[in-house]
Length: 322
Image 1 (cartoon, rainbow, N blue to C red):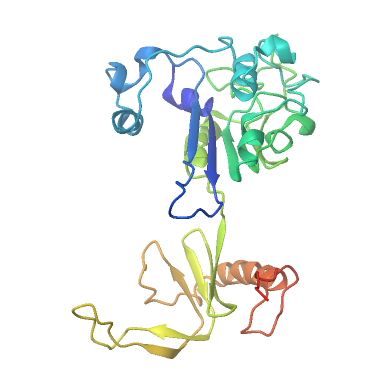
Image 2 (cartoon, rainbow, N blue to C red):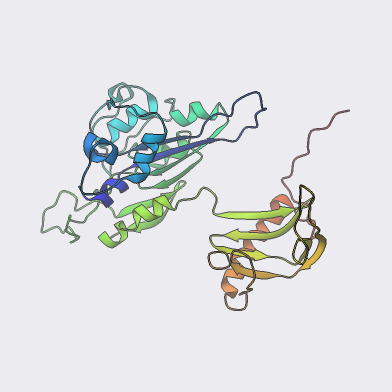
């Protein structure tokens, strides 16, 4: 099978625990489940595959616990996913075979799923890739315990396109003629349609680049919003801050000097090429500046900003002893 198709038919479940723990209580582990359709035992390098390499998965096998016996509830798309999500035989929860794009059923949201159980232990979770447990909004991952989702709601070959990339027409009498274009979904909303093989070739990159946090807010001191970032772009706002530039570094455990109130000027930086933030390019990319300013405006309304005198609407008080 084409490695692209195999990867794009995978469902990756990532769960991370964000609860604070004391030094005497071990922190719960992060959990990553990669569930791949049609992968055989010998398809990984650590299991003897030749002709291609799977170094990341091989490294996971060598550095962790490697199991050599695995059974799937059923050897088909939707049913196997119903089994791994619920721990039940799929026929117990009403799922069999592979659900079609026009299917009116899906995994019942009343069923208990892995992310719902993990959520009780303070985990946050995201599903990336092929879902295939119901394409209606009522059955999508956010209604099944996941905090975030990015992927296709069913198999990537369930679209009105032949395997050679040519459209399926009424004259060709293909069973997939009436299928819709593949919807790429983020959260509960379709953000794009996959229409060609070229579009499909982007899926692996889109999935592996998926980041639960699209933007990042640089707060410092009490509540100063000093900058915002999206992707490789960082917009720094004018602010007083700390710099070590021009001071000797620390020595023998003693800290070096610093200017705690250096006046930083507003600037836009491409962190991919300029991680040291030395070259301000805001004059060349005004549209990027406006996009990042919008993120900052929303952040100030939400969390406030002492630099602009905004208190914010959604800040909670810290705990306090009497």
